[in-house]
Length: 326
Image (cartoon, rainbow, N blue to C red; front, side, top):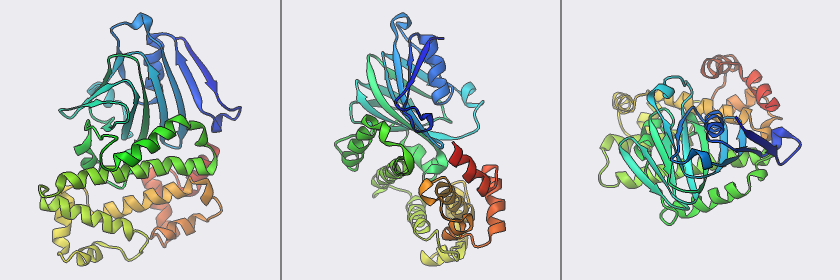
């Protein structure tokens, strides 16, 4: 395998990593290590060249990909070997590409955005030279159910329509300035990018449901937004959520059951994800673990430590130390 590596800083934890593959076999290994395992194909592998410029921040991967034409394929056999669930967001910067997933196909031109799920088969193909930005992040980094986002996979979100007119330029600037993603402010900026994408996805889903959505889906969207605004309230519960929407708790449970979860589980998951984000945020390093937990509705430190460990595999204090050393 022939891969050359370089960085833009002597401090590798703060550096933009650059890797250049001088052969197609090297490229296969490089992108599988940088993202998730993939199969790659090319009609002219002997004249292939490719380059990755990347930043890894916690579980967020931000990668600029520049290469000659080829295709990548995520197959069921590769998926079966993976446990962690990720979304990938592609921003086409130069050239064109075709994304196929969930029986949908999106043709991507410069400025276009599209999301896809690494836990379901997909194909991404480029006929000629191209440049694209890929942002890979865990499912639970979004405040939207993965099932809802699944309705947007392989769908072109144009740079000249809706929120794409604002978010596409922001993501383009991110691709051109990967080196700014350093230190506490860069760390926060990367997570802000994921929040912006969540807003874009929610707007796309709302637009599709206007006048045609299932009543339960529309109600679920309103309830999720209510929960997100009130996560810090320790009294937030299925009963209070149901009362705020003038429905019975039984109806509330049925709505969430259709989405494959429960009200209590959704509240707990969103609280834990916000706690995890603040525990790995350098700007929050001065705050006690218990203070961060209380901010998101966990008033008992021992209870918070138990459920955090159950969710993420280690106590919150250990998770914070590991994130600081990464």
